[in-house]
Image 1 (cartoon, rainbow, N blue to C red):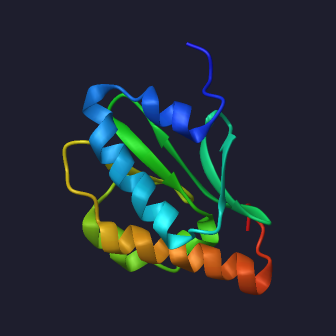
Image 2: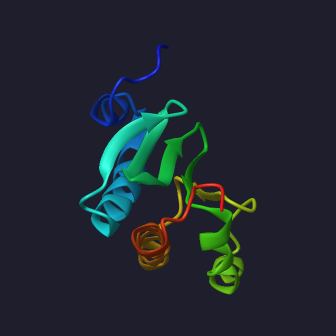
Length: 124
């Protein structure tokens, strides 16, 4: 299947089991930076404010939230307490479990603040 040309198209193409949870994730990160531009980067939705804030993506069994390694490190203890799968810079959420909406919102807001205040780069 060809890659989506827009975030709206990406959302339209989600399989039924992913659509509800992914839209919830999308709404959380969008609300955290309502002035951010929505773009497609790496074939997935991303949000930009002068720089990439974060991206989100849907897979067969889970979805990813990708802020920066630095931003996630600031929430290390809370993330570990949830027991979610993760790498240094990516949080994975299975479709069949409730999203930690408050934590996702705070991580997204922190990343947006860091870009606004410090012009923080994505890889930092």
